[in-house]
Length: 175
Image (cartoon, one colour):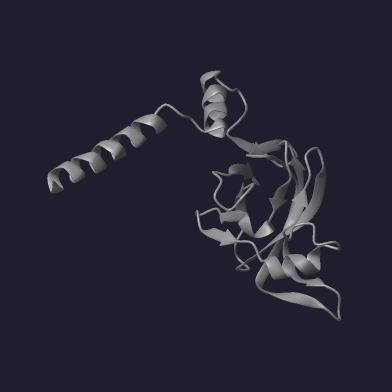
């Protein structure tokens, strides 16, 4: 009797696996279709060029390093090293609202060192918290500043911009 129950459970599991084997995620199938077309968009964008990740189209407007403080004389944040202020336009190209979170963005130095965004400094660098958990409806866009606190001798080489913390991201060259 125990062998029959074990075989029944095993068969049920295999049938369940087989039923899901032919399905594809809509986002995955679209990405596969685009890559099969020989998509001629560059893998790495430059400042001023739109770059897409998931439901967002990012356009980096500028990047300025060497800033020691953001905010006002009364309220602000002081850099441990230097702040690099990256002004980015984020447009929702999807069909539903998507949350933009500046803390999901990454910067890289010329030697490949990864730097995370400084969310608290970004609150002082943006007048309306554009880069802090901002829901963007389809077709809408915001422009805000993502802030990175990096050592004084570091020059940022590229950004990795994400529509969510777990997306693949898109690379934007700063050099």
